[in-house]
Image 1 (cartoon, rainbow, N blue to C red):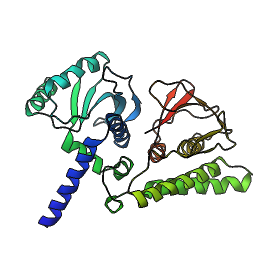
Image 2 (image 1 turned 90 degrees about the vertical axis):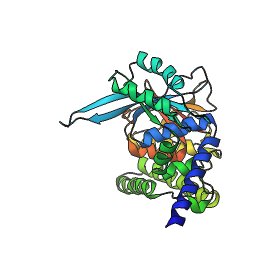
Image 3 (image 1 turned 135 degrees about the vertical axis):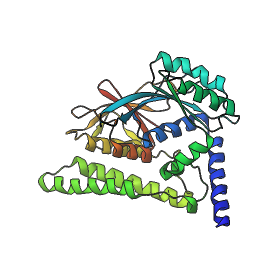
Length: 314
Protein backbone atom coordinates (compact mmCIF):
# COMPACT_ATOMS: atom_id res chain seq x y z
CA UNK A 1 0.00 0.00 0.00
CA UNK A 2 2.85 2.39 0.81
CA UNK A 3 4.37 1.74 -2.62
CA UNK A 4 1.06 2.62 -4.34
CA UNK A 5 0.78 5.90 -2.46
CA UNK A 6 4.34 6.87 -3.40
CA UNK A 7 3.67 6.01 -7.05
CA UNK A 8 0.54 8.18 -7.19
CA UNK A 9 2.41 11.05 -5.53
CA UNK A 10 5.20 10.83 -8.09
CA UNK A 11 2.69 10.94 -10.97
CA UNK A 12 0.98 13.96 -9.44
CA UNK A 13 4.32 15.75 -9.20
CA UNK A 14 5.01 15.00 -12.88
CA UNK A 15 1.64 16.45 -13.90
CA UNK A 16 2.15 19.66 -11.95
CA UNK A 17 5.67 19.96 -13.33
CA UNK A 18 4.29 19.55 -16.87
CA UNK A 19 1.70 22.28 -16.26
CA UNK A 20 4.43 24.68 -15.15
CA UNK A 21 6.45 23.92 -18.27
CA UNK A 22 3.77 24.83 -20.84
CA UNK A 23 3.58 28.30 -22.36
CA UNK A 24 1.42 31.02 -20.86
CA UNK A 25 -0.89 30.93 -23.89
CA UNK A 26 -1.35 27.18 -23.59
CA UNK A 27 -1.99 27.56 -19.86
CA UNK A 28 -4.75 30.06 -20.64
CA UNK A 29 -6.25 27.61 -23.15
CA UNK A 30 -6.06 24.85 -20.55
CA UNK A 31 -7.84 27.06 -18.01
CA UNK A 32 -10.49 27.98 -20.58
CA UNK A 33 -11.20 24.29 -21.25
CA UNK A 34 -11.19 23.51 -17.52
CA UNK A 35 -13.84 26.18 -16.91
CA UNK A 36 -16.02 24.55 -19.58
CA UNK A 37 -15.52 21.13 -17.99
CA UNK A 38 -16.49 22.56 -14.60
CA UNK A 39 -19.80 23.80 -16.00
CA UNK A 40 -19.12 27.49 -16.54
CA UNK A 41 -21.40 28.98 -19.22
CA UNK A 42 -20.94 31.71 -21.81
CA UNK A 43 -17.18 31.39 -21.42
CA UNK A 44 -15.34 34.04 -23.43
CA UNK A 45 -11.91 35.61 -23.63
CA UNK A 46 -11.55 39.15 -22.39
CA UNK A 47 -9.43 41.61 -24.36
CA UNK A 48 -5.67 41.15 -23.96
CA UNK A 49 -4.36 42.85 -20.84
CA UNK A 50 -1.17 44.89 -20.35
CA UNK A 51 0.83 41.64 -20.09
CA UNK A 52 -0.64 40.35 -23.37
CA UNK A 53 -2.69 37.72 -21.55
CA UNK A 54 -6.26 36.92 -22.54
CA UNK A 55 -8.06 36.18 -19.33
CA UNK A 56 -11.51 34.68 -19.09
CA UNK A 57 -15.03 35.49 -17.98
CA UNK A 58 -18.19 33.43 -17.76
CA UNK A 59 -21.40 32.68 -15.92
CA UNK A 60 -21.92 30.15 -13.12
CA UNK A 61 -25.47 29.10 -12.24
CA UNK A 62 -26.35 28.54 -8.59
CA UNK A 63 -29.45 27.05 -6.98
CA UNK A 64 -30.83 28.30 -3.66
CA UNK A 65 -32.67 26.05 -1.16
CA UNK A 66 -36.02 26.85 -2.81
CA UNK A 67 -34.82 25.60 -6.18
CA UNK A 68 -34.52 29.10 -7.63
CA UNK A 69 -31.62 29.51 -10.07
CA UNK A 70 -29.46 32.63 -10.13
CA UNK A 71 -26.33 33.46 -12.08
CA UNK A 72 -22.95 34.76 -10.98
CA UNK A 73 -20.52 36.64 -13.19
CA UNK A 74 -17.01 35.19 -12.83
CA UNK A 75 -13.71 36.77 -13.87
CA UNK A 76 -10.86 34.26 -14.19
CA UNK A 77 -7.23 35.34 -13.97
CA UNK A 78 -4.58 32.89 -15.23
CA UNK A 79 -1.16 33.07 -13.57
CA UNK A 80 1.52 30.58 -14.67
CA UNK A 81 3.98 31.50 -11.94
CA UNK A 82 6.93 29.68 -10.45
CA UNK A 83 6.98 31.83 -7.31
CA UNK A 84 4.13 31.95 -4.81
CA UNK A 85 1.20 34.33 -5.33
CA UNK A 86 1.16 37.23 -2.87
CA UNK A 87 -1.77 39.43 -1.86
CA UNK A 88 -0.68 42.48 -3.96
CA UNK A 89 -0.87 40.32 -7.11
CA UNK A 90 -4.43 39.32 -6.24
CA UNK A 91 -5.49 42.76 -5.06
CA UNK A 92 -4.44 44.48 -8.30
CA UNK A 93 -7.06 42.36 -10.11
CA UNK A 94 -9.80 43.17 -7.61
CA UNK A 95 -10.42 46.75 -8.76
CA UNK A 96 -10.92 45.70 -12.38
CA UNK A 97 -13.28 42.88 -11.43
CA UNK A 98 -15.28 45.17 -9.13
CA UNK A 99 -15.52 47.93 -11.75
CA UNK A 100 -17.01 45.40 -14.17
CA UNK A 101 -19.48 44.20 -11.53
CA UNK A 102 -18.14 40.66 -11.35
CA UNK A 103 -19.49 38.52 -8.53
CA UNK A 104 -16.43 36.27 -8.24
CA UNK A 105 -12.75 36.74 -9.04
CA UNK A 106 -11.08 33.34 -9.55
CA UNK A 107 -7.29 33.14 -9.49
CA UNK A 108 -6.00 30.07 -11.34
CA UNK A 109 -2.28 29.56 -10.84
CA UNK A 110 0.40 26.91 -11.09
CA UNK A 111 1.98 28.29 -7.94
CA UNK A 112 0.92 28.27 -4.31
CA UNK A 113 -0.87 31.08 -2.51
CA UNK A 114 1.29 32.49 0.29
CA UNK A 115 -0.11 32.05 3.83
CA UNK A 116 -0.46 35.82 4.23
CA UNK A 117 -2.33 36.01 0.89
CA UNK A 118 -4.67 33.21 1.96
CA UNK A 119 -5.35 35.14 5.17
CA UNK A 120 -6.15 38.34 3.26
CA UNK A 121 -8.49 36.49 0.90
CA UNK A 122 -10.32 34.98 3.88
CA UNK A 123 -10.60 38.41 5.53
CA UNK A 124 -11.90 39.95 2.29
CA UNK A 125 -14.58 37.30 1.87
CA UNK A 126 -15.54 37.43 5.57
CA UNK A 127 -16.39 41.12 5.21
CA UNK A 128 -19.17 40.11 2.77
CA UNK A 129 -18.10 42.53 0.07
CA UNK A 130 -19.84 42.53 -3.29
CA UNK A 131 -16.97 40.62 -4.90
CA UNK A 132 -15.92 37.19 -3.64
CA UNK A 133 -12.38 35.93 -4.25
CA UNK A 134 -11.77 32.27 -5.04
CA UNK A 135 -8.68 30.38 -6.09
CA UNK A 136 -7.32 27.26 -7.74
CA UNK A 137 -3.64 27.14 -6.87
CA UNK A 138 -1.08 24.44 -7.69
CA UNK A 139 -2.30 21.47 -5.59
CA UNK A 140 -6.01 22.29 -6.09
CA UNK A 141 -5.48 22.75 -9.84
CA UNK A 142 -3.80 19.34 -9.96
CA UNK A 143 -6.82 17.67 -8.33
CA UNK A 144 -9.32 19.36 -10.65
CA UNK A 145 -7.40 18.44 -13.79
CA UNK A 146 -7.15 14.78 -12.77
CA UNK A 147 -10.95 14.69 -12.85
CA UNK A 148 -10.82 15.33 -16.61
CA UNK A 149 -8.42 12.88 -18.29
CA UNK A 150 -9.30 14.34 -21.70
CA UNK A 151 -7.48 17.53 -20.70
CA UNK A 152 -4.44 15.54 -19.56
CA UNK A 153 -4.20 14.01 -23.03
CA UNK A 154 -5.00 17.19 -24.91
CA UNK A 155 -2.34 19.25 -23.16
CA UNK A 156 0.29 16.49 -22.90
CA UNK A 157 0.43 16.63 -19.11
CA UNK A 158 1.54 13.01 -18.64
CA UNK A 159 4.26 11.32 -20.67
CA UNK A 160 3.72 7.91 -22.18
CA UNK A 161 0.64 6.23 -23.70
CA UNK A 162 0.25 3.70 -20.89
CA UNK A 163 -0.23 6.48 -18.34
CA UNK A 164 -3.17 8.11 -20.13
CA UNK A 165 -6.53 7.31 -18.50
CA UNK A 166 -8.32 8.75 -21.55
CA UNK A 167 -11.97 7.77 -21.78
CA UNK A 168 -13.49 7.51 -25.24
CA UNK A 169 -16.94 6.76 -23.82
CA UNK A 170 -18.37 10.27 -24.15
CA UNK A 171 -17.20 10.93 -27.68
CA UNK A 172 -18.27 7.40 -28.68
CA UNK A 173 -21.78 7.97 -27.29
CA UNK A 174 -22.02 11.27 -29.20
CA UNK A 175 -21.01 9.52 -32.41
CA UNK A 176 -23.48 6.70 -31.78
CA UNK A 177 -26.36 9.17 -31.43
CA UNK A 178 -25.37 11.01 -34.61
CA UNK A 179 -25.17 7.72 -36.54
CA UNK A 180 -28.63 6.70 -35.32
CA UNK A 181 -30.11 10.01 -36.46
CA UNK A 182 -28.28 9.72 -39.79
CA UNK A 183 -29.75 6.28 -40.42
CA UNK A 184 -33.27 7.61 -39.81
CA UNK A 185 -32.74 10.65 -42.05
CA UNK A 186 -31.33 8.60 -44.93
CA UNK A 187 -34.42 6.39 -44.92
CA UNK A 188 -36.56 9.34 -45.99
CA UNK A 189 -34.11 11.57 -47.90
CA UNK A 190 -31.08 11.28 -50.15
CA UNK A 191 -29.09 13.73 -48.05
CA UNK A 192 -28.56 13.94 -44.31
CA UNK A 193 -26.94 16.61 -42.14
CA UNK A 194 -26.41 13.94 -39.49
CA UNK A 195 -24.70 11.66 -42.01
CA UNK A 196 -22.26 14.44 -42.92
CA UNK A 197 -21.53 14.95 -39.23
CA UNK A 198 -21.14 11.22 -38.58
CA UNK A 199 -18.66 10.87 -41.45
CA UNK A 200 -16.47 13.80 -40.38
CA UNK A 201 -16.66 12.90 -36.69
CA UNK A 202 -15.79 9.23 -37.16
CA UNK A 203 -12.89 10.05 -39.46
CA UNK A 204 -11.46 12.67 -37.14
CA UNK A 205 -11.95 10.80 -33.86
CA UNK A 206 -10.22 7.73 -35.27
CA UNK A 207 -7.16 9.87 -36.04
CA UNK A 208 -7.20 11.30 -32.51
CA UNK A 209 -7.40 7.81 -30.99
CA UNK A 210 -4.41 6.78 -33.12
CA UNK A 211 -2.47 9.78 -31.80
CA UNK A 212 -3.15 8.76 -28.20
CA UNK A 213 -2.15 5.16 -28.89
CA UNK A 214 1.09 6.11 -30.65
CA UNK A 215 2.11 9.38 -29.01
CA UNK A 216 0.23 9.17 -25.73
CA UNK A 217 -1.37 12.56 -26.40
CA UNK A 218 -3.31 14.66 -28.89
CA UNK A 219 -1.13 16.19 -31.59
CA UNK A 220 -2.66 19.66 -31.52
CA UNK A 221 0.03 21.05 -33.83
CA UNK A 222 -1.00 18.67 -36.63
CA UNK A 223 -3.60 20.52 -38.68
CA UNK A 224 -3.91 18.55 -41.90
CA UNK A 225 -5.79 20.57 -44.48
CA UNK A 226 -8.24 18.94 -46.87
CA UNK A 227 -10.68 20.15 -49.52
CA UNK A 228 -13.87 21.50 -48.01
CA UNK A 229 -17.07 19.44 -48.47
CA UNK A 230 -19.93 20.75 -50.61
CA UNK A 231 -21.87 22.12 -47.63
CA UNK A 232 -19.00 24.52 -46.85
CA UNK A 233 -18.37 27.49 -49.12
CA UNK A 234 -16.06 30.47 -49.10
CA UNK A 235 -12.72 28.68 -48.71
CA UNK A 236 -11.01 26.03 -50.81
CA UNK A 237 -9.55 24.03 -47.93
CA UNK A 238 -9.64 23.84 -44.15
CA UNK A 239 -8.12 21.66 -41.47
CA UNK A 240 -9.91 18.43 -40.59
CA UNK A 241 -10.24 19.82 -37.06
CA UNK A 242 -12.38 22.74 -38.19
CA UNK A 243 -14.40 20.73 -40.71
CA UNK A 244 -15.26 18.12 -38.08
CA UNK A 245 -16.38 20.77 -35.61
CA UNK A 246 -18.46 22.63 -38.21
CA UNK A 247 -20.09 19.40 -39.37
CA UNK A 248 -21.18 18.59 -35.83
CA UNK A 249 -22.29 22.19 -35.19
CA UNK A 250 -24.40 22.04 -38.37
CA UNK A 251 -26.06 18.91 -37.02
CA UNK A 252 -26.60 20.45 -33.55
CA UNK A 253 -28.45 23.52 -34.83
CA UNK A 254 -30.31 21.47 -37.47
CA UNK A 255 -29.15 23.74 -40.27
CA UNK A 256 -31.02 23.04 -43.48
CA UNK A 257 -28.29 24.21 -45.83
CA UNK A 258 -24.58 24.73 -45.67
CA UNK A 259 -22.24 27.23 -44.03
CA UNK A 260 -20.48 30.18 -45.63
CA UNK A 261 -17.04 30.55 -44.09
CA UNK A 262 -14.63 33.48 -44.23
CA UNK A 263 -11.32 34.27 -42.57
CA UNK A 264 -11.94 36.82 -39.81
CA UNK A 265 -9.19 39.44 -39.33
CA UNK A 266 -8.49 39.00 -35.63
CA UNK A 267 -5.22 40.29 -34.08
CA UNK A 268 -3.14 37.62 -32.41
CA UNK A 269 -4.93 34.71 -34.10
CA UNK A 270 -3.15 32.60 -36.72
CA UNK A 271 -6.50 31.48 -38.13
CA UNK A 272 -9.88 32.78 -37.06
CA UNK A 273 -13.05 32.09 -39.04
CA UNK A 274 -16.37 33.87 -39.26
CA UNK A 275 -19.25 31.51 -40.03
CA UNK A 276 -22.59 32.70 -41.38
CA UNK A 277 -24.89 30.18 -39.73
CA UNK A 278 -27.95 31.13 -41.78
CA UNK A 279 -31.08 29.44 -40.48
CA UNK A 280 -30.49 27.80 -37.13
CA UNK A 281 -30.61 28.13 -33.39
CA UNK A 282 -27.71 30.26 -32.14
CA UNK A 283 -28.22 29.27 -28.50
CA UNK A 284 -25.33 26.81 -28.44
CA UNK A 285 -23.32 27.96 -25.42
CA UNK A 286 -24.86 25.42 -23.04
CA UNK A 287 -24.55 22.35 -25.28
CA UNK A 288 -22.25 20.06 -23.30
CA UNK A 289 -21.74 17.65 -26.22
CA UNK A 290 -20.61 20.54 -28.42
CA UNK A 291 -18.08 21.44 -25.72
CA UNK A 292 -16.71 17.88 -25.79
CA UNK A 293 -16.45 17.86 -29.60
CA UNK A 294 -14.74 21.26 -29.49
CA UNK A 295 -12.14 19.92 -27.08
CA UNK A 296 -11.46 16.87 -29.23
CA UNK A 297 -11.10 19.11 -32.30
CA UNK A 298 -9.01 21.77 -30.56
CA UNK A 299 -11.53 24.45 -31.57
CA UNK A 300 -12.85 27.32 -29.47
CA UNK A 301 -15.81 29.50 -30.38
CA UNK A 302 -18.02 32.43 -29.46
CA UNK A 303 -21.08 34.12 -30.96
CA UNK A 304 -20.68 37.63 -32.38
CA UNK A 305 -23.94 39.08 -33.66
CA UNK A 306 -25.31 36.71 -36.27
CA UNK A 307 -21.94 35.07 -36.85
CA UNK A 308 -20.00 32.37 -35.07
CA UNK A 309 -16.33 33.24 -34.53
CA UNK A 310 -14.11 30.20 -34.11
CA UNK A 311 -10.41 29.51 -34.01
CA UNK A 312 -8.00 26.61 -33.69
CA UNK A 313 -5.76 26.19 -30.69
CA UNK A 314 -2.04 25.80 -30.89
